[in-house]
Image 1: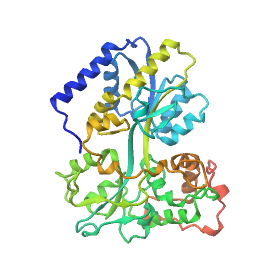
Image 2: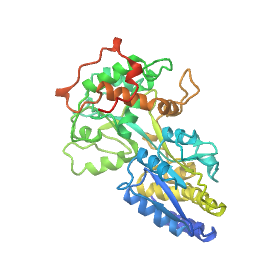
Image 3: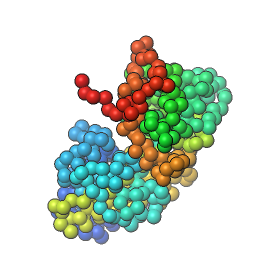
Image 4: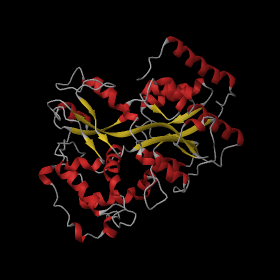
Length: 403
């Protein structure tokens, strides 16, 4: 349960941040250029103000200018002026650390809190800030399972469960892709020409599309569950509790209870779920002086510290990677973050974690789904199921040529 921030704690936090600003060197003479996909206007305004009070000057566009992880990385690569990147996920950070982008090189850097983020790090390069995951939820009232508990071995077991479920209506989007990553986890096959996923896995995902319920006006799966239109749905962790609370007063059939659910619950899945972490790393910029690079590293160290991450979490309902921040914020780990994390499990037959495996194959998966017509928006106009025994996977894993 999240702790109530008492007057004492608030004062302690305020004093700690003042101390950072007062005792540290004033780095405000250099404007630190930052790229991020965690850049809602509220986040950008908060971070610029907090950084200024701590002795830093930063430049960060909000999502009206740069929206999404792809856009953030592309802009940083094209503009060649990045000092820091934060946000993204393991897939993108794996690409950054491994030099995928011509003009982006992640510097060697180890923050003072490196030992506080557990496995959420690319040692010596990038370190975790916040985590979230994709969740499978169900109603257990008369609009759901009528008291029946739901337990699966794998996410994909949903397809043969007999329940009704929400499914997304397009291929792209971070939440959509993470849902697919969770569904495909049990079907990894490094020898498969179908993007490293067995053909049975693609058959399963097709059935997930064909038998799921699609709602053109719903971008995410929580609203159909709140309405009682489906028994099972998916949603991302960071906004779950806030959205449930917000709907309690307005929805006709609300989900009741957040930390202690009353008419809903998390599906108990043996595998766990797919987590993503947002990281921070320092980008090599040949135009910086040594003093300016020191300022950039000092900002990154400040932003990921427990004190700042406590305030960031309290302001934006995020879950920190920093264990000291977690201990201060929560009496116990919330149920949605106590789920096992299979994104860091090794994929059998490879030396990659599942997150790295996703990164290695994600473009192929997107091409397969796009080329075969997955996630059609209108069930009345659903495409014919592919002839699975006679597909040219070498072609399907490639982007379709532009018309």
